[in-house]
Length: 103
Image (tube, rainbow, N blue to C red; front, side, top):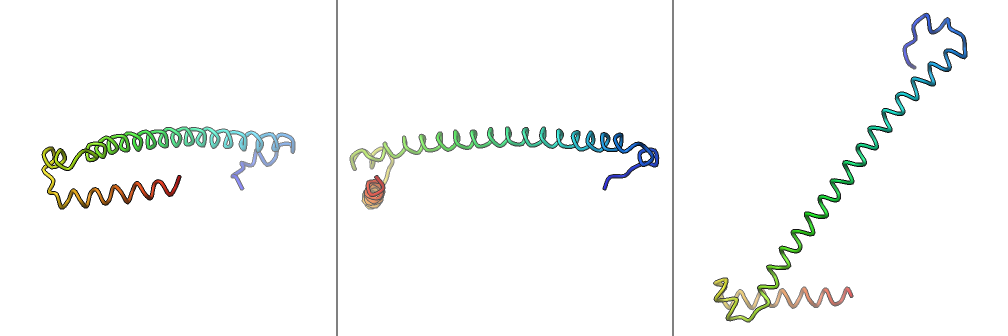
């Protein structure tokens, strides 16, 4: 219960009700302003995270396209041993088959 001065307690009932209503409205409007600001910040944060994820995915996608070249080109460009290339190709095939199952 909020603190009341003796002047407020001696006031008329309508005046007391109006004072309480005004205090509640002021607090409520501050809460609404805070929640709206918080929601805006959250929306911008989500948009930023989505854009960062898309950027990272596109960069990663560009890197995987390079590994889809022939074994000789990948060995020459990246210095990857043939044994590792076989493992990479096996991983790519596994990912592709899993992706096709989801379609």
